[in-house]
Length: 198
Image (tube, rainbow, N blue to C red; front, side, top):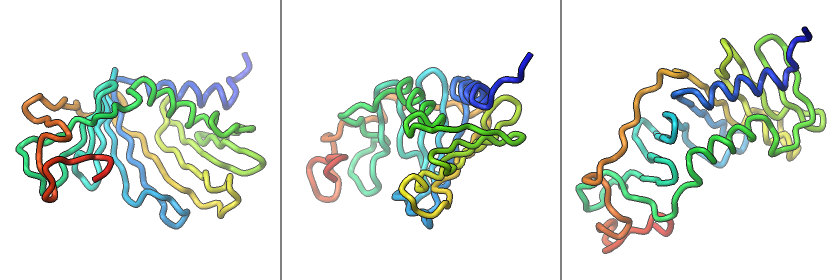
């Protein structure tokens, strides 16, 4: 029996991680690499269709299948904790599929996958654009070097850590008593609040 190729091994580890009962990702952005996101992000995922995003230790969004709830901004006049977003997210399953394809470099036409020990490197045009560390059949860390595609310095743009696979905290879906429509309260002196327009 020939050992599985690096691509096959990485694909199996990503599938095992993303399709587990639950997991946590902690994303650290590297501003020196020109990242346009200025804060770290913490996401809990519960199968089959729940995602909870936290920033600075506070829940900022909960996705339930194709429905999305954003935390009510501080200072707004309402007892509700979440506002139902009028434009639904792409949905949990689509997000997982997109992330899976992104992690494998398929969106960037990766032309090589190599392996040294537990580390898998994805390359394009001779430049490393992503690397993954796999342990016990799951991905535990991903590093993106996507700025390398544009010819900028080869610094990591972001580092994503995966933890608590199959053991992440249970996400609590907001009850209707804690949810308000985007125009059901005042914020910043306005009679309505538009999440997109502010």
